[in-house]
Length: 110
Image (tube, rainbow, N blue to C red; front, side, top):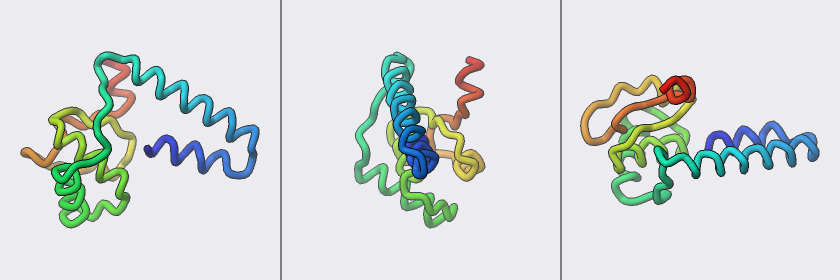
């Protein structure tokens, strides 16, 4: 979701640039969807929302979508892939955290 927000922000002033960025974004989604190591998840649940609310209260992370992504990783017991500095700094442990937090650089080196 963060990547889409960035694409929309970068394309605000130039419709040609916006169209190219949106097309590149869709290509990226297709590539990710075809990688068997990754899977789509439901957008939210009561457990995801509970973790997301906890990250707001305990850690002060204000971005709702970032908190939902973090909560989804925790709920599904899977890794969180993010470039968000705020999420990368979280040092949570236990059932309310993703199994690991990865950057693209880390994934590409695997």
